Length: 97
Image (cartoon, rainbow, N blue to C red; front, side, top):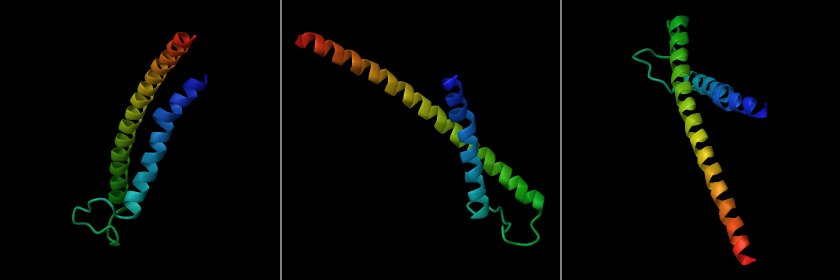
């Protein structure tokens, strides 16, 4: 059960939270292309701002999901290396006896 919650957190919840926070920062601090529209001008529609936020959210979510896949691959490689190291130590201890 713990593994299910851990996997759910690392694959869905954390990437979405990070993407949401990253999109908010991009929109608030103007780190996105304006396409000729100033983000501070009063005539910018709420719909344009919402669309820009959604685009930023999708891009950030895609990036964080890719990072989570890379992290999962790295974790599996670390587990494999740990198994190999344990086996090496076991054989080394057996030879010393």
